[in-house]
Amino acid sequence: MLKLTFVTALAALTTTAGAYAHGATTAPTPSPTKGVVLVETNLAYENAQAAGTGIVLTSNGEVVTNNHVIRGATTINVVVPSTHKTYTASVVGYDIGDDVALLKLNNASKLATATIGNSAKVAYGQFARAVGNAHGGGKLVITTGKITGVGKSITVQNDDGTTAQLTGLVQTSAKLVPGDSGGPLLNAKGQVIAIDAAGSPNYQFEASDGYAIPINKAIALTKQMQAGKASALVHIGKTAFLGVSVAQNQAGQLAIASLVPGGAAEAAGLEQGDVITAVDGAAIATLVDLRNALFAHHPGDTITVGYVDGFGNQAQATITLADGPPQ
Image (tube, rainbow, N blue to C red; front, side, top):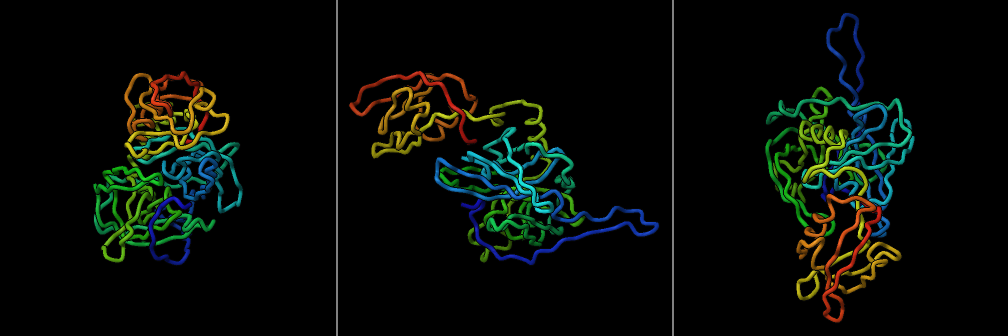
């Protein structure tokens, strides 16, 4: 499973290096791969793996990526291509709606960091370069193009079939492929102006097909996460886990399709086929409703789940939430 489900062509892998000439008054252009890392996740509850890209913000290992890169991850490993070192990572925070997540690499130090630009200065027609873990191949690939739009909105489909609206995006003709999610979109100076997030499945019929989250917006969110300030959109820390997979049944109800053996829901007596109707008194009808109800909670919190069992009886269960993968 690769985190960006779109197909495109590739340009050759290139790097750019600069050095001060005698008497030079401007800094060299940083390498486009500086501060770019590979993100590899294990999705144990889905029996799958995924790959994406990240951008190093601090030398001690704070990395920004797309939320959909780490969604559902039971473990996260980050590889620094220049040193081939692999670090385990924990989730500092994430924003589902804006598709931004902040990771912290364990025991990392002296990492090269990306050069951050100003997305407020992004303009139509300017040069753009995208860098990412193309097709999860374990190496950074670079494509080039131009900025073809700003302030764009798109609807994206998640792996679980739900859809999300992303707004205020930068649009580019630099082609994006699966695995590029979370990588940088750079300007001609090698500065990060946006985070690659989505591409078009019909790029061959369009003038441009890549979409990226403006870096100013992403940095504002990561600062909120660094400060530990949760909100209606930003979740901080570990994710509360009910221990079920759910699906709409033939009656359109949200039914338990399977339970994690020994998980929170099974321990509380819920069974496959039970229909979840409420959490803490709030009605639940869809997967999004359930996710929203759990979003503000953390492992160890206790909730009350209302449900209808296989015999049609209404019941309630008090459940202590476990530690699970990010949403």
